[in-house]
Image (cartoon, rainbow, N blue to C red; front, top):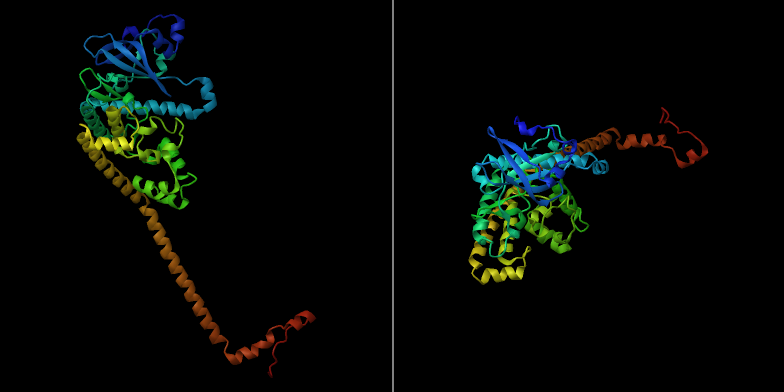
Length: 420
């Protein structure tokens, strides 16, 4: 950035301040847009999480949207870093890199940006401070402002559930093409604009499945390990994992009293709403269609105000009331999508282990051939002995065998004489 407002003779206290301190004081920020400079000021704190805080920005420059969101990845405290070491620093950097990458992909696809908040800039700086100032070295992203979260709207302000879910379903299908699973669809992560456009926000819990196996994500690894090493999980079934969720529930969990929704998970291994989590995620794997489950929970919340499904209430919704037809159609569509996702997952896992099975079959064939060769050698060796030691010759060989008496007396075996 070459604008003169990025460098000035500010007091040393301001130059040495952290980004969090400057944001609380309302310091101006700026980023390049084309050949111009966009200037904005923080208005209020929207929320905070494990790695970042979100601020609402009021944009001062004309010719652009009036509001934006600044996601500030708070610098790791030295004392915290000393306790947790490089692992925490690596997670902090990876979180920023992942959200920046997803935001850039959304920005490159205008059709998808209509359904999810895209990245505006990853090069935001505080105006009036040198490039090397500590605050300008911290990681920040400027994202589109998507409106008010659904859980902050009054019942009168909430839009109709059907159009909301249809808009989000279109966004989830587009994200699937990018290999992105949001993994935390909830009323607080779905925002509605004044004109009724609904978009997904906060990809902090998202997973990138493109070009990598599901098991490589540390969170899924921890969840899978906890699941297959449950005290009641049969050891013999661990190597057949993953089966379909229906088979896992019917053949393994229900007979043994395993309930994954009663387990407690730490926030690192499991972020988000437990009740809205796809069943396969709690069992340690995900598919691109897993967000459909989160949409179903969101739809249920908009209809009932509850964030977990109650089977008796669901049954009444399917048979009574004006929502019965809409709910049934949505459930059928979601069921078809999830069935296809699980079939794809089982096929991929089967292909993953096919080479192992081929090796085992080859080893079994070789072992059988080796056993047959050993049996053949043993048979030929017995035949050879029968030819060499006929009955008459065996009698002549008897004096070579020591008797117990000769052994006790210290005698030596007597060889047969020539006359014998």
